[in-house]
Every structure is written in structure tokens, then in C-alpha cells.
Image (cartoon, rainbow, N blue to C red; front, side):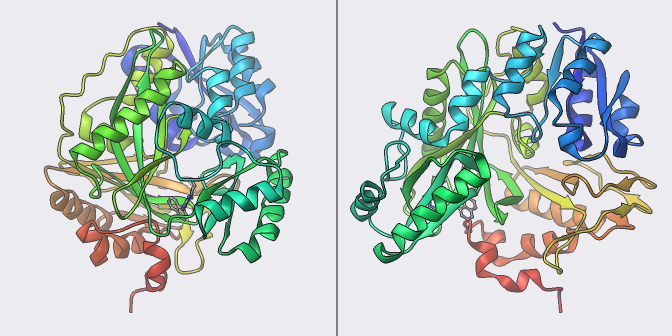
Length: 451
Ligand code: MV4
């Protein structure tokens, strides 16, 4: 097992990783930017090293500074958290070259899945269902147009180097296709330095359902159920839950089998998420794979009783998977992401100093957060303040706990998205479980303050 882990991240996820390390008896090193001196991850870690000025490209994204910090502190492993360097194949390579274990998959696995066109190709070759479209990346505009005509409009053109909603364009008809294709390629080149794009049929009202998987170094991969992440705004997830209200045990097993087949084939090590779109007729299609621990991992922890971060560390150290899923998921879990943003002013960021902080609690309520009264939310990073995660025996019980939790969550000094989240979880379509990725688009009134 490792003796000392450097956490190459900040905010709530840095605290989450430190907790897992403490339980495993492993020492921790926090790295921080000049804007994060007063952060709790710095206070709770055994060692702390400043890695640069506030902008993340000068600190949390600076590979050389982070590796130097690990060497100075004597860390034998690095946990990247999510975001920042978590899906950087070259960072994983640099760690390996420096004799430091990157807690996550191999650089090759990150690279393969980071290219969404090659991941799609692999899925096709393995017989995992994908959305009708091109086999891999497509360069020739005429060939692209003929594929689009074949699968039928509307189609969506996605950047191979994109993912998570970045670099996508919808073409409604053959007339607009050539221009959309050209624009998509230009945007992909400008945004990612890679013009490769691929084509899929555009599904109108899909659900986003993702499977959590975990693999060890002996080649074993298991899935630990799904999360429904359909409630999103501009490709930012707002609310996630497990199990998905839109799928049954049969579909869960099919998605799980597909996810395991894909990850087992590449010998995937660590925590990963295989994303699917589930259509209104229950058809399901592989979309992409994320090679990191995700923000929403706690909903899976609540319904499985697993500690996914501890498990990531154990398998990175070469231990075999210690999880055992006894058939069904246990009850129901929901997560709401609370951000320092004004939901009624187009989610404008609202950094500043927290004056009052009273988090919710009670049975089945978990809050993952790094904020405290007196803490100043810096303007340099994403504006996640806290994740409120509830668990109940049934979805109704979980929902009731979420309503009460949000109601008693007091954060003053910055504007938060709490009132907006309250409205969404009270919306009839959310309450009934009959929703899809278009819920917020269909209900613009949710973006106005309650009358
Ligand atoms: C799609 C789609 C419809 N059809 N692909 C958005 C995030 C990125 N991972 C892929 N996304 C989508 N891909 C096809 N073929 C609709 C979306 C999409 C979406 C997906 C999940 C959750 C919210 C979404 C909001 C708008 C569009």
C-alpha cells in the first residue's frame, strides 16, 4: 500500500480523497494555489505545498509543479480527483516516468477513451450498441452527408476530442448539413487542436444513464449500478440519482454488461463511468466513457455502501477488487449540486465570503463540501459549493429528505442555486420520475424566481 498520497485537486473532492486516505492509514499532501491558502484541504492534509498563482493553468494544471511537489513531499502516488489533470494521458505518463503511481487508469486507456470516435469504434467492434452513425471519425464532407442521409435527420456532429457536451452541432436537414459539418470541424480544431468529428442520429428526448465500473490490475471489472443524470443545464449536471427511475432490472443488467464488456476488453483499472443514452422506446446506446471518479459518485456509494475512493486507491496499489454487489441496489439516492451562482440571472457566478453556513443533516443525509462560515469562494475555479446527497428506502422517502435538506441548508454571503434546485425537485415531471434531458428546456419558468 502507498505511504503518502498527493491530492492534485482542491475543493470538496480534495477533502473526499483525504478522508479515504485517513481511513486507509495513508499520509496526505495537499497542493494549493495562492487563492486556496485558507482552504480546508490544506488544513486537513498532513503536508501542504503551494504550487503557484490562482489561475489553474499556473497551478492545478502545472504538471511540473505537481510532480516536483510530490517528489519534495515524498509522495508515492497522486490522486487527481475530477477535472484538472484527471483525464490527462500525458500527466499519467509523467507520473509513471517519475515513479509515482497515478491513481486511475493507464495513459493508454485515458487516451483511447478520450478520443470519442475511437471509443465508439471499439464499442461497435465489441457489439455494444451505439447510436446509429459513422463508424469512427469522418473527414470527407460528401461521405459525411451520405451517412447523414442514410441514418436520417436530425443528426448530431460531435468532436472526437470533445465530450461532455463540448464541440457538438445539430443538423436538422440536408440543406444545413454541409455548413454544420464545416463549422463543427473548425470549432473542433480551434477548441481541441483536433478537427476530427463523427456523426450520430440526434435523439430528441433521451435520458442520460451512466454505469459506474471499477477494475483491478488482475483484469477483473465489475459494475456497481447506474446513475440517472438527465437533469442538466448547458451540459452541467444539476441533479443525479440512483437507481434511474427510467430503467428496470433487465435494462440495468444489459447496460452493466455492455459497460463491463467494453472496460474489460481494455483491461481497465480503477473507477470509470460508461455513459449511455436511453431513448423513449427504451433503446439504449453507448455514448462515451469517462476515465475518472465523477462528481456524482456519492449517489452510487449511498445505494451500494461502497467507498469508491478507497477502492480506487486499493486497486491502484495492486490489491484486487474488494467490492461485492449483492444483486439489487439498496434503496434510493439523490444528489443536488449547490453552486455559488445566481440561478435567476443566467447562473452568473457569485463568488464572495460565506457569512453564515448551516448544512443539513439527519438520517440519510450526506453533505460533501469544503465551505465554512468565513470562507471566501474564489472567482478562479468552478463554483460548486456543496453536494447534498440523500438516501431513502424509496424514491419518495429520498425526495422528501432532499426537500427538507435543501429547506434547512443555510448559506449566506453568496447567492446559491438552492432555490432553483428546490423548484426542480418539486416539478411534477421530476416527482413522477418521467423526465429526460430536455426538462429544463421545456420548462423555462423554472429559471424565473417563484412568484
Ligand atoms: C446526444 C444527444 C442526442 N442525440 N447525442 C450532451 C452531452 C454529451 N455527452 C452528449 N450530449 C448529447 N448527445 C445524440 N446522438 C443529446 C445530448 C444532450 C444531452 C445528453 C445528456 C444530458 C443532457 C443533454 C442535453 C442536451 C443534449
